[in-house]
Length: 316
Image (tube, rainbow, N blue to C red; front, side):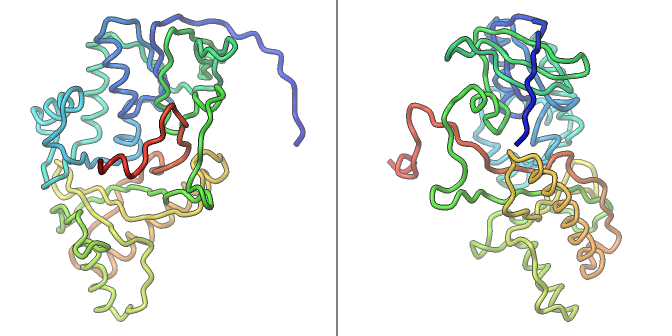
């Protein structure tokens, strides 16, 4: 591969006690915890809002919501107090726009500095010591220094580029879990949340309805791209978030693979909508309101730390 050699002088735009790279659920918790502990904190986020997979990815189910604590419970309580949640058994749904605003408020209340539309580009290293990050944004290329950098990119970008060892996929073949393009439907008659827990284990209630609709429409051999779909109701009437697309054999840390996955995910959403409106009376008036800004990536790098958690550890 042809290369170029860059000679860059990057201005230092700020110094902090803690820098958090990535404003998804983990980054939100890390930044709030740091700032509330009284340290100067910067949160770097690629989108123009916080929440990551909660918001950009539209992954709204909060599992096991009754047993949360700390910052997560605070988020649930504040959303609920404003009527922006809906409880459906073990899952908690929420209004995505309300989540964006709430996270902004919590950061401002806690004194977190935020850089939106900013991408982590490279680590600032002194030998093996990570001393900051280089960020690319509309202001150009800037360096921010810190005593502590917390990698909440979701893919271990900071750790990997700083030289930390990592693994990708299964040991035997490198395969990773499929990606999912979430989407929002409007004007549904079928708005109650589906049974997320498969009965039997590989199916859900929604899938049974879809299989029945296919058979009744003479599509006995219809090939579905999924096995455990669900639709979770939103606080707004007759709207729901659907999870039912599986994009396989793509890497979330390969730019071309990720680009192809986004396009394939949107294509699968169109196919799902066609099936709904054509063969299921409950969805005859439904329409596609929007797809997620970012496909849901379940798995990429696993940073190798001091100890590797195994399945046996979970059952001790």
